[in-house]
Structures are given as C-alpha cells and as structure tokens.
Length: 236
Length: 249
Ligand SMILES: Nc1ncnc2c1ncn2[C@@H]1O[C@H](COP(=O)(O)OP(=O)(O)OP(=O)(O)O)[C@@H](O)[C@H]1O
Ligand SMILES: [Mg+2]
Image (tube, rainbow over all chains, first blue to last red):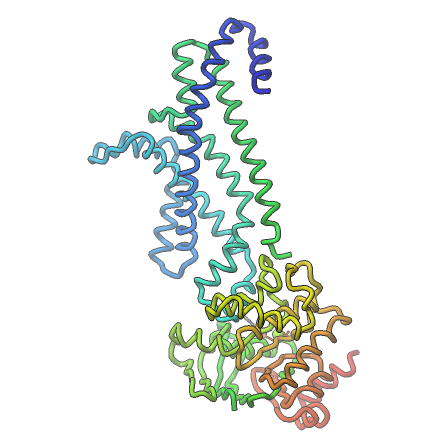
C-alpha cells in the first residue's frame, strides 16, 4: 500500500518519475534511521520523561515549599523556551563548560526534560481528578499515603491521563525530527542526507512525512486498545 | 468501655463544628448518632478515625492505647488509630478498579500483610455474611447501590476493626435497597460488633441501638437508651427535631 501511495505521488509530481528507483532505495535507510534512532529516541525519552513527570507532579502536590518551587521553575522554564533552543544548549552549549555529550544522549536528555515538564501537568491534573473519597477509603483501611497513592490513586489517575499522554507521545515522535539538527541520524536526517545527494527533495520529504504518519497511526491504534482495556479503572 | 472520648474540639477555619464532645462507646454496643443536617455528625464520626484531625481532645482505648490531640500525632499513632476502626461511607467509595473481592482483600493483604490464601478464605466468608457470595468477581460499577454498600461493609470488616463506623450508610440508596443494608448492620450488632452509626433511620436506631446520642450545634444535647431519647426526650431541641422528622410538612 505504501508503494502505491508513493507511486501515485510520484506520478503527480511528474518531473521526478525517473528517480523512482532512487526513492525506493532510499526508503530502507530511512526506515533504518527510524528503527535505529527515531523509535528508541522516542521510547527512552518517553519513559524517562514520564518518571520525571511523576516525580515533578508529586513534588507539586507535596507540602514542601522547596519541592513545589523547584517543580514550578522547571516546568515553567521548559514550557517557556523552544525545544530546539534547549536541544542546542545541551549539544552545542554544554561543551563550553566542559560537558561534551554525543548527539543521541543529548537528544534523549532534551526530549526527556520536555516530556517531563509537559506530562507533569497532565499527571498532576489526573491525580487531582480522583475523588477525595478514594484517598479516604484507603486511609480508612489503614493505608499510608504512599500505599493509597500507589494502590488506589495512581491506577485510576493513569487511566484518566492516557488520552492526553498519548498526545504528548505522538508529538514526541514528530519532535524527534528536530534531533536531525544536532546530527542524530534519525529518519528525517536520513531523508535530508539522501536529498542533498539526489535533489529529490519533495519525494523524500513526503516519504518521510508518510513514515511519521504511519508510526503515529499505529500508536493511536495502540492507545485505543489500552484505553478500552483500562476502562474499568475509572469510577462510574 | 471500648473507647472514651473527652473534650473533642474540631473547627474548620472560623467555624467551630465540635465544641467539646465527651462520648463513651461500650464494647459490643451500638451507638446511634442523630441530629439535624450540618450539625457535625459526620465530622464527629470522621474524627474518631482521624480522617478529620481533631484540634484537641483525648481518646482512650480499653487496651491502654491513648491519644492526645493537643500534640501532633506521630505517623504510627495515626495508623494504629485507623487500624482500630472500619469506616463505611455514605457514598460507598469502593475502589472502582478492583473487583468486589479485591476491594475486600486490599486491607488485610496490603496493609496488614496477611497471607493471601487465608485472606481470600475469610473474605469469601464475609461475602457470605453480607449476602453477596455470587458477586465477588464483579466490579463496583456492575453492582447496585445496596450491593456496593454491602461490599463497603465487608471491606471495613476485613481489617477486623474493634469499632465499626457508619456514616448514613443508607441515605444514598433507593428506598427499596435500604432494608438489605440495614439487615447486615443488624446482624453485625447481634454478633457483638461495636458500632457507631450516624443515621436518619429512627426506627432502626430504636430497634438496634443501645444508646442514642442527639447532636446539635456542636454539642451533645442528650444521650441515653433509644426509648428514652426517641420516645421521651427531655430537651426541647430533641423534641423539635423528632417532630420535624416524624411529621415532615
Ligand atoms: N472539610 C470541611 N471544610 C469546611 N467546613 C466543613 C468541612 N466539613 C464539614 N464542614 C462544615 O461543618 C459543618 C458540619 O458538617 P457535617 O458534615 O459534620 O454535618 P452533618 O451533621 O454530618 O450533616 P448531614 O446530616 O447533612 O450529613 C457544616 O457546616 C459543614 O459545612
Ligand atoms: Mg453527614
């Protein structure tokens, strides 16, 4: 099906028909870039980001002024600055103070920090959306706050947070293309490199777009499945 | 005496809801708390397991465990207090992501760290007791209100508390479901559980309670055996309250 898509597209763009083979042979390197970098980058950043987000959300919900304050500054700083600038600070800026990181770990750090900030607000809101009576029911059977949080509140909050977190995840897949600018040879960087050689800019970039689209499409199907499975986690 | 409460005070900001309450709860007895809406009955009950933290007062349990709320409770004291009582909520508050059986097993398994197989067996016995042996694997949203409340009772019983607290356990229920829940509480009373219950079901209080406590304006107005309080109240305020309930206009 992808082939047909590509075919039509190329016919539509007339001029580049002769480069059909070129594009087919570039498909594999792009997919490789996706498998080697785009997907791992997305998954690692999302997992680290979620851990960071949970900690940040809990800090925001704690009663310690210092924790609340640092969490707020972190979220505000990340949300108030462009992702690309953060990426550049980590990869091109930090070496000036002696911290030299490879492109891939730099990207993971930047994306994790980003996911952490945005998702912390989602997680905080979903924790707050669970009725107070659920905490109290936990306390009433003798639970500590930690037990009530992990056994009663988070399972329910996680269900509430899946739709907004999936949006974050899908944005992340697309944002990883920014890593091309700090030389991570992910999907889009591969497209750029090949295009620079062959001048098939339109075909290659549209192909890249379609590959991203396919990944996101698959992800939204998975999201749907998870949501259905966890439906019972919500108080009715 | 299972529990003796002295000088219990509780305010929410400027609003003083409990103005120095003394209550004694006899072991194996049923204490019914009645009073007008907003008088602080729920607050009193919630103070008994520190879901609401009293501002001052003392608790003394028969086993020597005692608390003084003028000082800040330690975490350990708080947990010990909570594990002495089981709470049944007006709105059930079952855990929606757990089956009825899991709801009931949660306390003994997670909090008390008891053996899972033994807990399962005693949980099944509890379901038998509340008449829901065939519903153990259903989720709360698959149960009627009356059934949910009976699971709520089983969940509270499962931690083997010394004192069962009920806050208007039937007032969220359709009238035809009230009876099944009251019957369960009646059975518990017969078995000798110590119970404190906030209720508007005067008939039930009359039949089941050993003591009735009429509560208004942050004070205990009067307290005594049900026949005395419900049939022959001494205080004007009690009379007015009973009149209003018995002859709603
Ligand atoms: N968490 C709270 N914060 C502020 N005020 C509260 C809080 N809980 C209760 N109150 C107030 O305390 C008073 C007593 O409330 P409480 O719920 O104990 O009354 P009640 O006797 O149980 O009433 P009802 O019969 O309607 O259930 C009310 O005026 C209520 O508004
Ligand atoms: Mg109440």
